[in-house]
Image (cartoon, rainbow, N blue to C red; front, side, top):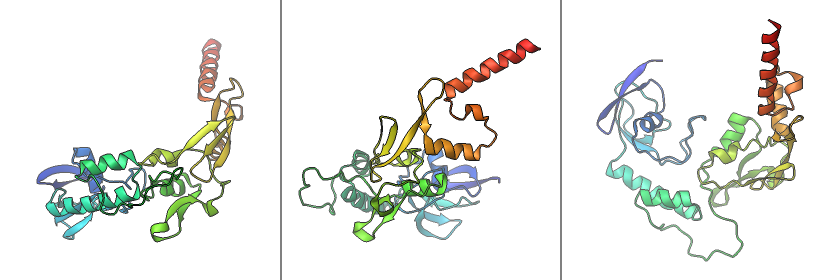
Length: 263
């Protein structure tokens, strides 16, 4: 890979050939919003908020900057009136989809939207679940693509689409890794650690056992996650597989001290 010159809003930037324009723009401090983008995952282009106008060096028109690869001579605009209009319309839709999300409300105001034309006028029933999901798909993709657990996916279609575990029942595939919660932009996913178990409340109360350190008794991680890590890291000594990081450090320090004394 080598660097190429691209132009964003009239300014030239040296970026890595092939990298997403959105990533390059973020690094340069250019304000392009996005909900479904994460550097650790393949570009998805679902939220459409990162739309830019391609002026030169590619197919002209509006396209998502997260799926647009940087090439020599590429020129895009991120702040045209057309782009601003598209973003406002999308933010109104997301505000209607997730009216209980502080993140979405703050984001909407930032881009000039205080209320949505699409918001439901029906009064919310007492005790009804919070509406924070914008169906960005980050949780689904990180669980399936990065973690490889495949616990959750999209359920139903159209306005009835939600995200949950299969058949909306507790899953026995969950590692309890919290990756889904970590990438969720609206902080919808609720996870609690109580009485030796971790429960992902949002995924139909999916629960996994927490493993305690054999030496100090502190919680190390969920059992399924430890088993998966050890399955992949076959060079980890057996006597350290059920030991926390702190105790491993003490073990290494003690072992190195003994080795120095033996010299």
